[in-house]
Amino acid sequence: MLVLNVLPPKHHPEEQVNVVYLTTLTKAQILKQWEQSLTYPDRFVVTKAESVKKLSEDIPAKDLKTLGQYLDDNKIILDESEYHKLATIVADKYRETYGINPRRVSRMNAEGKWNNKSYAYDDSDFPLIEECLLSVNHSRHPH
Image (cartoon, rainbow, N blue to C red):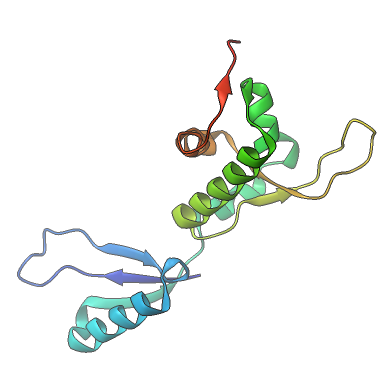
């Protein structure tokens, strides 16, 4: 994954380095960054980096939860259209946050057949799911 590091101006060294995942930018945003890099070449550094979330590949699949499992465990009810909307929002937010797709896992259904692969999330991603839940209609039953 390519990362653009935008260094602070020399007259403001106390400012933070701005790190931008190039995969999250539109073509217009990339062109704008490129134009700025031509004007201030000493402030723009493109590097190759591994996503921190790549480390989650070390977590066994059984320790991850799909969105459906998370909703069931927390007694959150959505109709089918809201569920699909939420699944899209969560995956998009994950990509926007980490620059990679969520991890895919297979789960066995009630009939003992393996379902198609689904995105799965670890405990650290649950706040992201909760944030996305605010944008869909749902009900939450007490535990």
